Length: 508
Figure 1 (cartoon, one colour):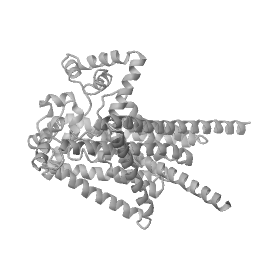
Figure 2: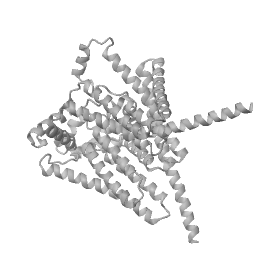
Figure 3: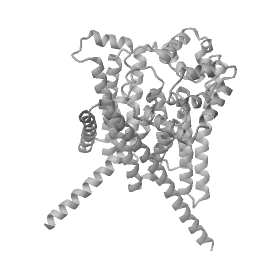
Figure 4: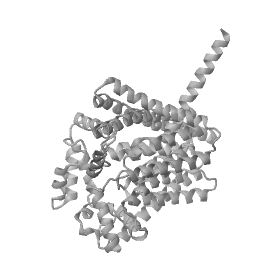
């Protein structure tokens, strides 16, 4: 009787696991397909011509097909050699691009860089600037730049080259992560498409915290999902991943995405190892260690910033409710609002004001809330890549002095809309990857699960919080590895179709 009950429970939990996996990767495929669709819907009115829109999509298809073909046919190049070539070629090309585009730090980037230079020389508290009393979490990135300036004599050019290094390493991690659930050819194509996609180039000359944070975030995912036989090794990897995630969050607060994804994956692991209570305990312990190391280090970093007098507010946020109040603003479609900023931070109690504003805005009728979410999806994921951050006034003036045969507006237009075509194709392939991992059973691989869950968590968070199209760069990093599985699935369908056709021809 006990054996029958145990087997029955095992079957029930196995069914639950399959349903959850289907839900996760089905939702990922739906999300990626939605991103592809909103991009295509923006493409036609943006170009103003059906032929040009079709040409942009065909160009994207051509690039993806050429990359896939080249990666599958290059069998003579070993995996390690390809990895080295991918890293070095990307580093040289992106480094050259970052050097040639003389973008000057402006807006927030100018404040951060200027403060880093000032702090490296004086060491005075950052709270001399109101900006760091409102946004204390930006102190981590400033300290990083200040350390490079003080100890390595870094300047703007040095920091741009560092951006190129981090972007090249992220491309390597996209390949390495994809290789764990896709073929060698599919993983190579995913890494190469990520490195070639224009959206990974346009912020290289900009002193943003995204590049360093993203490579650390991806590194944490890579470490946490690294296969290990011994339990001690698995726990050590979980601790190392927590440390890497804490560093990523100290630069830019994104860790909640990975922690939420890892928590969901823990449930799946528990279902998979349901026959053993010991395995269940180990799974929980592994996640707890990841979260504990992350939380402990973040508390330590924040405490150190306070103790040294760098910023009395640490590395947290003085008003976390701001992101939600701003993100739920119907009039601005969730984008930064000067009016909201003046209202909230000009009040006696910014947190209370922001909380009340957010609660008031979330209570709008369901149809208006759905419309807001739809508009936010269109804006965040459907708009073309922005060149404004890179093409600062001095860069535009330099280009104008070069007397180019084509107007700068036309160059900008061509880059944006050709990139949009490739963007749509890549997310369509990622959607195919979500389906393919279910079809092949690769959905049981931890790496595929954590990437898909991270993408869904990031997408879902931006339905509620402040959005900017440039923030989607992290989505590229976590979604592009699934392209490898998508290409594998399409290749398998083509192979089966060709085999079936050959058999029919033989019978004839």
